[in-house]
Image 1 (cartoon, rainbow, N blue to C red):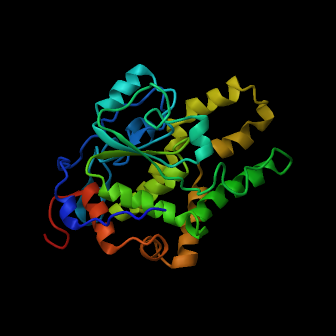
Image 2: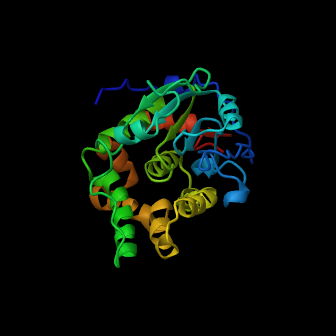
Length: 303
């Protein structure tokens, strides 16, 4: 994995993002062809949020228009392409495996064909799983123990983000790339819920968003993706007796995320130690990411 330049706090001061104001509304458009697209700063009230940018520790407020999270950018409608192009996204980070990228290439990826390329957007693939195709072990087969197997499989994905030595360097590179990019950035995997979800949780933790809000934003995938999951099950003629099994794989649950968070405590003792000792971030890297994401009306520690 190629080494990436370290950030300095001076870089963070040069970004053109406008300061967030108190109770800044989340105005990110809902995309018909990319259901799980949203601003990391917060979620709309329709999908379980407050409709405003998330608050953080030390009386901070998440900045909108800095980081966007999404499912794969394949099959975008023309109207959604225009919407994304208007967000001034300068970089797209693809978290999928090479096999996933080949099967459903991101439009701006090399050799993806003459499709949409956002104005000024660069494309960077960073395979979080670090495997050629699917994660190891493969997804479970349907059977009598299908429900338990599905839940345990999903939990294993999240513990792997913490425990697997071949995944941690890739997560490090994602965070460092986000810290170094001076323009708005979109990161995505396939459904925008697990690899993208874990990346979002780390960023929100760095920003100082409360655990309650982090969990609510994580679980919002089930609201954003509800209609799409229903469509997947019906258009693929999945027998209704298997719907519960597939919904466990296609959605998110609190215990999936909790499995990863528990592994952080078990192996590192704290999220901060995981970020520094597990992922290899420096304190400066963390400060740069926090400066990009959070606006403080007063400096922390001052009244």
